[in-house]
Image (cartoon, rainbow over all chains, first blue to last red; front, side):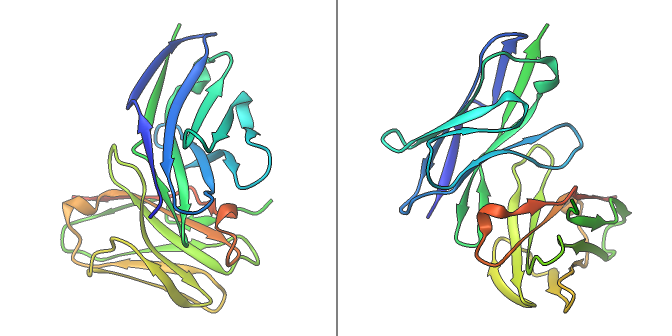
Length: 111
Length: 113
């Protein structure tokens, strides 16, 4: 069965600093991996996804993630944090006919 | 581009009442998925349908039922509501087999009092 584990339920960075949100996956087959963002009282917005091909995936709002099979990781990064990036971020993996979400990481941005 | 439509967006019910949530998939999408996100929780898969047939089932309570209609829209029916059913309910849609192209709706926030 497929699963994802997000390391750190809360991450706080200063505005302009590097954002790094960690996600490790477990899968017996080549995985489909996703990062979603959820702003307070909002729905889920897809940031980026990895299916096949290039392991460095670029998404919206300046985010990117790198699929590393050797480390079973799919960490999300952004070079320079902005106040508007404050939100909940979910790593997710496709499993059969559904998507399984990680427990989420709340990103806070310090002025 | 057309997105997944969910209605209502907000719903307030009392304990033991029933509720019906509706989901209208992206045009030509034939597969619908339902997820439940409790307060401070990650979304949990409930159930999915393809061509009006249930295709997968997750941790959906027996008090809940769902179906997909010939126009591919889906309804989630919840009976004997409990306080713990208060959550954000997401619907997503895709073409069959294209789970990595699953698009989420804005969600219905159900509050049970």
